[in-house]
Amino acid sequence: MLKVENIDVYYGKVQALYDVCFEVGENEIVSIIGSNGAGKSTLMKTIMGVNKPAKGTIEFNGEQIGSVKTNLIVGKRLVYIPEGREVFPKMSVKDNLVMGAYSRKYSSAEMNRKLEEMFEIYPRLKERQSQLAGSMSGGEQQMLAIARGLMSEPKMVMYDEPSLGLSPLIVDEMFETIVKVKQTMKIPVVIVEQNAFMAMSISDRTYILENGHMKGSGASKELMDSPEIKKAYLGG
Amino acid sequence: MAQTVLQLIIGGLAMGFIYALVSIEYTIIWNASGLLNFSHERLILLGAYLFGAQFVVRNGISNPIAVVLMLICTFFIGVLISYVLMRPLRNLPLVFSVTGTIMLGRIITEGVRLIWGNNPIPLVGWLEGTIKAGELVINRTYIIIIIVAAVLVAALQIFLNKTKVGTAMRCVSQNKKAAAFMGIDVDRSSAITMGISAVICGIIGILIIPLFQLKGDMTGMIGIKGFAAGVVGGFGYIPGGIVGGILIGVLESLSTLVVPGIYKDIVSFILLIVFLLVRPSGILGHKA
Image 1 (spheres, rainbow over the protein chains, first blue to last red):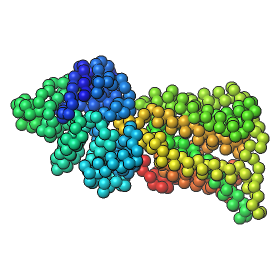
Image 2 (cartoon, helix red, strand yellow):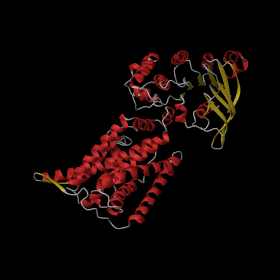
Image 3 (cartoon, chains in turn cyan, orange):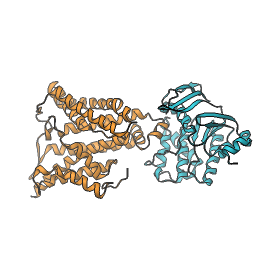
Image 4 (cartoon, rainbow over the protein chains, first blue to last red):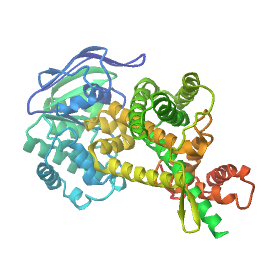
């Protein structure tokens, strides 16, 4: 579904990614773990066309997207749920959701059906649909950001740090729904996380990014048992 | 006395709406791009000259068609400014874009002088005349300004809140990053915003022709007063600009009852300073 090959990315003169390769197949959950500043978000933003790779190729659903503008990549139904939620604070919950379907041309019946689907996954959003998004708690905003992304019926979805700044209880709930959504929509999922344990425990495969280099990858289960990974990322 | 006061209020209201339009125009650019456009007084000038000096006087085109032509031209000039000036400067520190728009203002001013000359250009009959209501004699220009501005403000609100393009503009103003991830073309949306803002400038330009004549310094201080209107009402918030603009316009006009008319320009600056000291978030207290 997604194939990133040998990309180099620079911010001005500073190199952020070195020869990174990364692949997501049909219908799998892939996690990318790594510490702060490892280049995880840079990789996501490069896939989404915010940064342009200086070298290498990015292919999504059989099309080259390495030099395509962000809004057109979204039009190809690759959806990115940004780090830090990034909801539209002065719009209602419902308007935020409607904006999520901006790239699609839904009839009002389809729009309502999509909204109902999202409200089914996140009943809290239904209760708060006319509230301003900026006035909600962090967890609720994260739910909104996810639901907003799913409004466009993506062919693949990438979550960037969905657990950032949330209480442990809500984090569990968040990951449960991410798995549930994946099972019902049957689309590949990428999760970028500092919370390595959570990300690895729900994913099929894991990539490890360190200082802009891909340090390794493998089946999540096997990696979780490796003493090295335990020591570096799982706190023991 | 009562009549004089009423006349002053109507005149003040008209000027207030002009300041409100200037402030709205500042606001939508500020919200859409995080940039302050210091060339907009010159865009007002350019709109007025395109209409009056070029289309009406030189080409002899009838007024309504000249208005439409001017609106189309200013829209594309705005789009051009967005792509050539605003977009490259967007990611640099604010001082670059401020300098850039000031320079653009100089270029337009000198361009206008070069093309249409230094002398005032008379535009006979445009929006002039008086309306009599009983004893009261009102300048027709004021009434037209109030009506046009009110319709424009309402249309703008509907456009921003009810249309897909307008909603996309609001998204860009609230969160540029997220807007792109929704599939909105941020560059295009910013260009449309700039185009609309230039159109508003053009409309202001033709509205003030009967008040200040078609000449190089016709915009006077309305740019800075529109900015003051934004601060007084609540910067970065369209209703704030409307309230601030009308307040400044009316107070300024009424001030001529107590102080010589030559001092009336002080009013807006006193208000600006008082609000910055006492209530920097403005009358409507909106936090940007």
